[in-house]
Amino acid sequence: MKSIIAARGETVAEQAPSIRWALASLSLSMLLPSLGTSIANVGLPSLAQAFNAAFQDVQWIVLAYLLAITTLIVSVGRLGDITGRRRLLLIGILLFTLASILCGLAPTLWLMIAARAVQGLGAAVMMALTMAFVGETVPKAKIGGAMGLLGTMSAIGTALGPSLGGLLIAGPGWPAIFLVNVPLGVLTFVLAYRYLPADISKGKTDLKGFDMAGTLLLALTLSAYALAMTIGHGRFGLLNIVLLSAAVFGTGLFVFAEARVASPLIQLTVFRNRVLTASLAMNMLVSTVMMATLVVAPFYLSHALGLNQALVGIVMSIGPVISILSGVPAGRLVDRLDTAFVVVAGLVAMAAASVAMAVLPGISGYIAAIAMLTPGYQLFQAANNTAVMADVRPDQRGVISGMLNLSRNLGLITGASVMGAVFAFSSGTPDITAAHPEAVASGMRMTFAVAAALVVVALVIAAGTYLRRTNPKAHDRRPV
Image (spheres, helix red, strand yellow):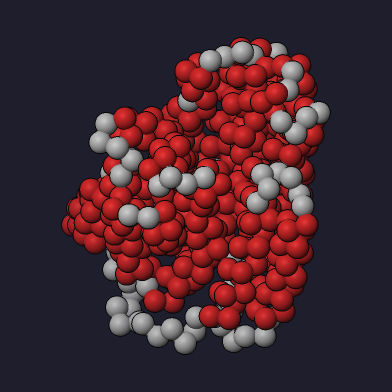
């Protein structure tokens, strides 16, 4: 017996370094897509000058990347479930890295935009499959900690982008903001190739089970929604209405089609799982609120509080820094406490922070609110993702991970448009830059009153879901 126990101990000890290196590869796979978003934003003025293009045209450098991620993330997750996740993740890392080279060497704006779309495809693969791999590489008791680590890496990528991008543009020039991904991409590929578990069936390449019609329908529907939310920058015109109507029609057509194919992209029966459905809804609501801080805060800090650009940048960096510091502790807390309790605790903190953002005056009030909002968000994200991914069947991990990421992206897109529109409407002027400081402050108060209401809706969903789960007669805990 002692020899058996000793042998098992040696096996665990041998596996521990491999798990750590596997997590390192997954962490980089989460870092690179978020860095790819934030570092490009800061380069738009330089890119407009380099390509002698209007700002509306160079914005497609960011939009093409985000559209590719949003429209394809569920499909590539499902493709990984069918063909093998390790194989597809390696392809995604390679695509992202090669597209980064093309972006850095692009001679024309439209070639740059095309390369960014390919880079977005690689990012979609990395984001969808990274969370799916957690269930295969980490013991179930430590999934919360791993989710917290991934949240931290995403926050690092988002926070690092503006400062690193500014340094690279001031030094080597704008191509460097894309080429910096190349050595990181190579390192990620090597670690993933060496340490991620092999696909169960290496010869499994049959794509007959992949729902091409559903993929196309979902991509077109999501594209219509994303464009409806971004074109016009919060001002809804006829084109926005047409696109939003197309998205609604496409959703109905997608559901109709998925109910009639043998191997659907998304099995509609998964929505019978109340935890999954609630998690997706809460994820979208919470992401909408978080986007409000990025859209509204710069105007509030500069136009209402009178801070210069340097101070605005410093204050805006507080949130990402807190996010970086709180991600891993939040994940470890999920491993120690009931997941439902942590979800609710995170939402309560976010609701209190949103109210504080609306009522507390001045720079101290803003910082105090952010200091509550960001850890609350990290608690919610780590617990919500763990609640979903811990019990997912192996053959569904990719598509469910993709759906989680999709709900977050849709929330960010909706937040940029809707919360921006609420802010502009509440300020009483379409041109925020010309608004009176008190009008901007009024817009800030109303925006975060709406944000608090959205978090309360998420709290109601959480309470209804997890209180029902405690009922012994409920059947909502079956694997997705």
